[in-house]
Image 1 (cartoon, rainbow, N blue to C red):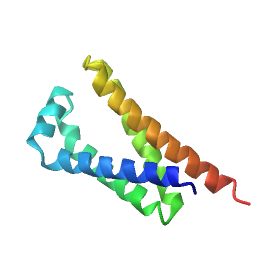
Image 2: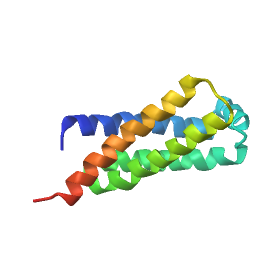
Image 3: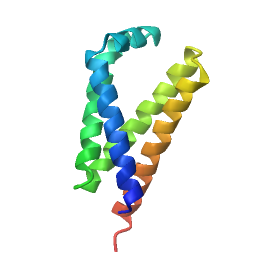
Length: 119
């Protein structure tokens, strides 16, 4: 697999591990999820992001694990964009979710093609 896919996986995994840990431990994230009007989703979001991050890291050695991890993060980022639009957040928040969606879509597409187009 190309170095760019592996770099994208590592970048995404690091970012989502940090965000997931923040969801579980940070008072700031408690306030953010209240602002999102989703306070009960904070812990589940953190756990799912840490799990997906682990899937991306493990996907460096076992590429098929990157498929569900990156797809799950794509779906989470679609939801995040919807939430940001619903609460009329500034464009910067929406663009961050869009960038994370694009990054994980790139990983998913590359790993999907690798998996299903084996010689």
